[in-house]
Length: 295
DNA sequence: CGGTTTTGACCAGCGC
DNA sequence: GCGCTGGTCAAAACCG
Image (cartoon, rainbow, N blue to C red):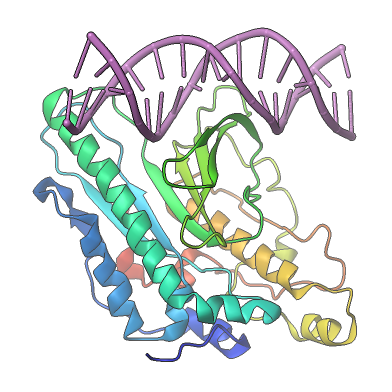
C-alpha cells in the first residue's frame, strides 16, 4: 500500500496552488445519480497529491423545491482542511484511507437522504427545505466557532453511531438558520457540520480589523513558527484551528452566506503573532474557480 | 435573572 | 398499522 504522509508546512503552503483537476462540479440528481459517484472526486484528487486527501468535502445540497420538475444538483467543493498539527500528523497519515472511507460513508448517507428526499419530492412534493451545506472538518471540538451565536435545541443519538448529533439554531431573532453537528463514526476526529438556511443578519463578530485576517493557506508566519519553536506555550495547533475556522467562514461566504465586510478574526486570544495578511483569503484561493457556481 | 444546555417527550415521514 | 428514525419542542437544570 502506498505510504501516505500527512501535511507538513510545505504541503500546507502548496495547497493553494494545487493543479486544477477536471470533474463535474454540478451533479444532475434528476438522474438519481448516486452520490457515491462523487467519490470519483476524491479518487481523482488522490492522483494529484496525498495532501489533498486532507481536504474536506463540502457537499452543498440545493433547497428542495415544491414545484417539482426542476433539476436538482449538488455541488461538491473542497475547502481547506485543517491540516494535521505538527504533533498529529500521524492522524493525517494514518487516517488517509479512513478519511476516504469517511467520505464514502458520509457521502453515502447524504446519498440516502437525497434519495429519500427525491422520492418524497416525486410523490408528495412536501414542504420545501432550505439548502444545506455540509462541512467535514477535522477538529477536536464538536461545535466549531463560526462567528454566529447558536442555541442548542436538541440532541439525538444517531443510528449506528456512538456519537450524538446536536442541533443548533441561530440565536438572532428572525434568523431561522439551523445547523447540526455530529462526529464521524469511522473517524471520530472528523466533525460533520451541516448548515441549513441563510443568515438574515451580519455576523456578530465580524467587526474586527482586517489586519488579522487569517484566510490564507499559508503556514504560520515566521514569527509564529519561531515562537512555536522557542515558546512551548504557543500552541501551533491553535493557529491551524483558526486557519480552518477562517476557511469555514470564507466558504460560507463564497456559498452565499452573509459575507459583507467579512474581516473575521479568530485571534483574540492569540497574542503572540499575527497571521499573514491576505486580502484574497477566500475559498477561491484553494478551489479552482470553475468549481464555483453562482446561485 | 436571563440566556443556554440538557433531556425526555412528541411528531412526522418512511419502510415493512 | 406498527416500528424506526430524524427532527423539534419545552420544561427543568445549569451558569455567569
